[in-house]
View 1 (cartoon, helix red, strand yellow):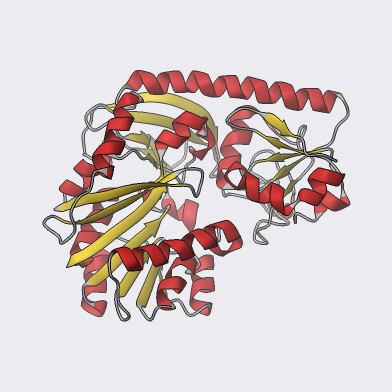
View 2: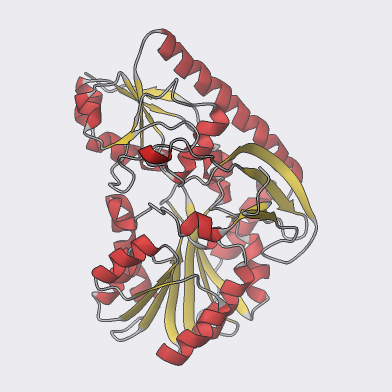
Length: 420
């Protein structure tokens, strides 16, 4: 694992404390999105540590080792928002709610940090608003610009916010979806946000919620792109460092359980409601302010590992064929930590055309379009994209009723039996 592509972070991203303690370790992996072409199958794959650390001062949970973001986001980045109809619907509903809640008007200026293919901004633009996306992944930025969503191919930063302010003026609304958990220098991001916002502007970000990860044993959301695993309490310290404050937090369902954090400049026009304190109190009841809780969590993960290995091994011993459904980033963590490789899965299917024809990291399992489950007729399909399990099953009822059965890996491995 020795190379110059990663480093160890010894301070908390939220409060800058050095009181960090290791909580758990998962199997080292390559970047979860580092799929290989057929010609690349012989190349060396770099493995990076997946160790979680706990801040004793603000109770934040973060990855200890940080992989160079240029490796993670500017090489073969294959996640595209628009390929998930479920997430597109979420973003459409989100835009309507935010426009109403914060009284955004036509000609309001909206910026999206980590804007991907511009799907979110397209809904604000349809209401006559001026929009600007910022994203470091060149391939998806090209898609956004082709769709007439003006997008800058760059990493958002305080330095960039200065030039953006000069060019576009102060901004009414800044948003970010599942990007702030990916950023090492988070204080620089919120400093840039504070600089760009109007006095009555609002910043709304959505990130995965560690409470859901903890309660449901969704450990595979721990991968190199996710350097932070968020709870509400640490956000208070983060925003206060740049003169901002929390006003509301909502629990939402996309991406396997998330929170929507709403913040403004201190003294802004919106009042803080009771959602912030209510969720912080719930986090305390779960003992997520204690290191020992995370140490015990690792043991819980290993129980799921043993149970899933037993189930899959039993099916293989019976001569059953098993495919995987979905090749999300988190599948790299799940497969490698649970020892699910080419001896278990014959192939994986995925709806994203950018992943089809590629091979998974380490195990080199081929990825095909979802039509393959009807052509090859596997006995079982393990749903690796478990956060979209309901949608996958509903879209492929023909498979479940006529051909085989789906398997859910978590929170407890189970075969989904529908009437044939």
